[in-house]
Image (cartoon, rainbow, N blue to C red; front, side, top):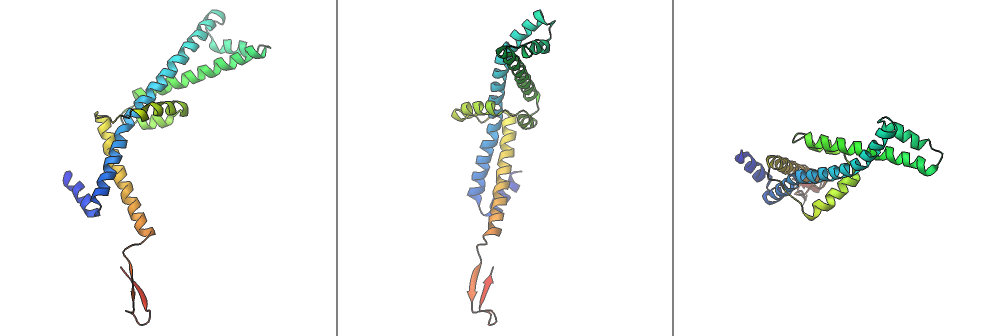
Amino acid sequence: MIKPIKNYIARKGHEGRVLACGILGGTAGGAIPGFIAQYIQRLDGGAQELGKLVDNWQSRANSLCDGSLDMLIDIFRTNANQVISQEGDLIANTNERYQFLREAVDALQNAGMFEKPVEFIRYFDQEMATKAFDVFKDNPTVSISPEGLAYAAVGAIVSCLAYDALTEAGKKAWPLGRRVVRGKNPENPVSVEE
């Protein structure tokens, strides 16, 4: 396993750069589980706070509307008083947000190791991601769990492949190593050699 990796690095002639890309990619990859954990915590905290409000409205619906929160929302929304009708919109929006956050937490907590990034993208919430990143950037963590090590390996491989692809693209875009030779060919006094 180690020998093919050494051969790849040595073949490229960029041993230090490839190693640096691998280390940076591995570190970044290994940090993904820590960030997702921070994100889940934020989602769960938001869901718990909104859950308290929804529970309060649900208890009102239980006593006034035979347990139907939708009926309570309709009563508020159809009220002639604009302040009360806006309260119906607030209840509906809060309940919808609560359901989304609860569903996101459940999906992320029950996702497998490599399903988590897919669920993260599926349930991405800009506000919660920003809050999670604000905490994460001050105290980043690189997980040494099997999940963290797997993400680190994937990150290292992807960064090395990206470096390789960018290096090859750069060579094609800016061909170095060619030199102009003058006077070798009498028909074409200027020629290019590889």
